[in-house]
Amino acid sequence: MSEQKIVTFLWFNDNAEEAVDFYCSVFKRSKILDVMRCGGVGPGPRGSVLTITFELEGQQYIALNGGPTFTFNEAISLLVQCDTQDEVDHYWSKLTTGGGQESQCGWLKDKFGLTWQICPRVLLKMIQDKDTARADRAMTAMMQMRKLDIAKLTAAYEGK
Image (cartoon, rainbow, N blue to C red; front, side):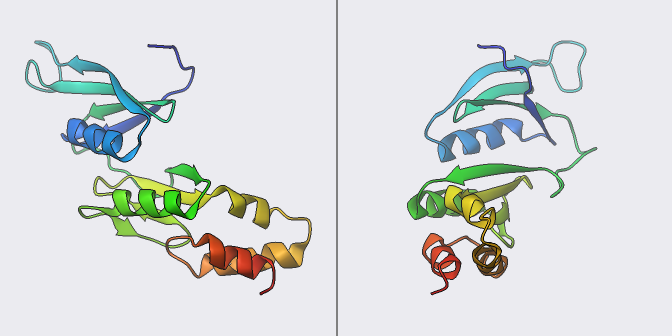
């Protein structure tokens, strides 16, 4: 396991293993790197999962079964940058499955309460365009969407 300097640490109640299995099923390049189990002194019963270190698309995460004290909120989200509409559709569909919730502007909350942004890379270029009219049209179109639609964003950006 390579040493990543900064690792995102995700706090789950008691379903870290289920969440990691779900995330690994969504992303093709994913794997579980390590499972740490509770010993005789720990927050859970001996042998139960304490943490799972896993990787999604080359990025490491650690999932903790930390109990009900803390929950996710929208102040933190994971951004998935997509190159095609098929990718946007895939991640949107998979991450809203089983009780996930759609939000606005490409944001969603998965069934575990973790917030994701499913964003076409091209949108970031559009809204940073020095031609502010084009950038504003793309931003306006985005603000009216739930799942982002590259064709509609492009049409708005181009003034069509």
